[in-house]
Image 1 (cartoon, helix red, strand yellow):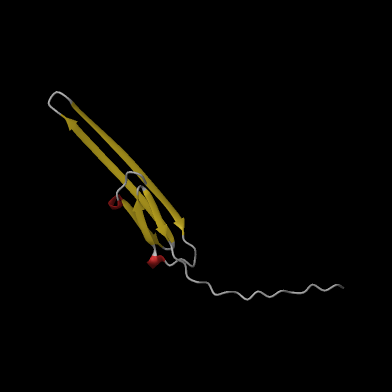
Image 2 (cartoon, one colour; image 1 turned 90 degrees about the horizontal axis):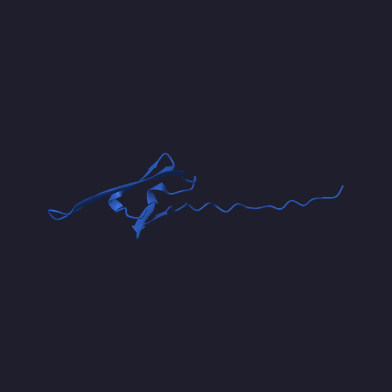
Length: 91
């Protein structure tokens, strides 16, 4: 998300779906009386992903640093399953 400020990024969780949206608008005008120029830039980002069943939606954290968005989604600990080996007999 290069060029976007954290205020321009919105992250929501709704019904097990994480949505990340970002929108950047910038207009510049510079110059003196006889020299004048302007420029504008626009960027838009939108993605959604389904969270796993064991995601802790209330504990999701996000950090935007140097144009890189890092989203951390903690998961609940699944109870360890007992694995039983079945012996194959010859008939």
